[in-house]
Length: 365
Image (cartoon, rainbow, N blue to C red):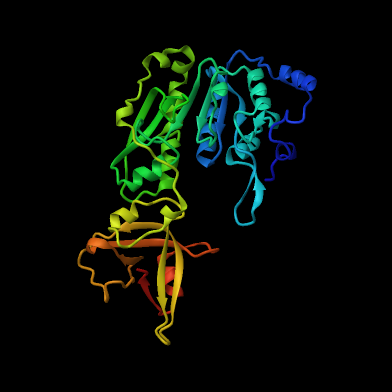
């Protein structure tokens, strides 16, 4: 589905308005419903799932709130064709028939014309879920009940942009999701509620992220359960201040961090379970001895539990059962289950091995 042209051609609907027409437009935005007005901010697919749950909950007969507006990242070029597409949140809103003139896509949340439109809506509460934009102080002053964020970690642990990836990288056995008030300091506001989860050894970052935001298990369910206490003010009373001395940071994953080095143990490499993890291997033609370096994305893996596997040579990669068995540091083995070649679709390790047609595979040291 193509994005509504009015949404595609403007950052938000009051962008080209004159001051007089803007005032008139803003006046028309004033809420008429007796329900509590909230504004939702989010961008990726996990945010769209939260928005979908909020929209569904808002239509329940006993609902005390409604979604007055949606704020998301501007349309961007995505996928192979580099088509300019709306964010998953904007697309979900349009698919559900949400008014396109109440979907805001500012480049920055501090733009004054956007803030003027937000003030006109008179929201009592703002909710963020992976919005991806810094909220300035003048934004945070608008909703009288505050701004509440869903964060996929047990705060104060893993504050920052990549909490799930960093938790998996550290090999944690438990993580969770927190619903917390937003303050100017990064993910440091009082925690209203949290939910704990045991981490499966084989789970991948995208799957864990989806789980932590979902209504069935994670942040969406937690948020909807806590909305009455947020609206009646009791959440501010019970919210737990974070202990900054126990805080840890989860900075954004840098491109160079995506490369795997097989001089590390298999468990360390497996725990780098985020999309885009890459490795270089050497393909050797048995007929002429020609060597070719191949770049692979490692889509899924597991740590080999068998210590009896014997490799022909220390740097050989073999195919056993359903996996490429890769030698790592400390005599550990990593089993690679799915890979992706540049510009190609994700394939199984078996399909990749068959495509080698008898050529040998070694790690690049």
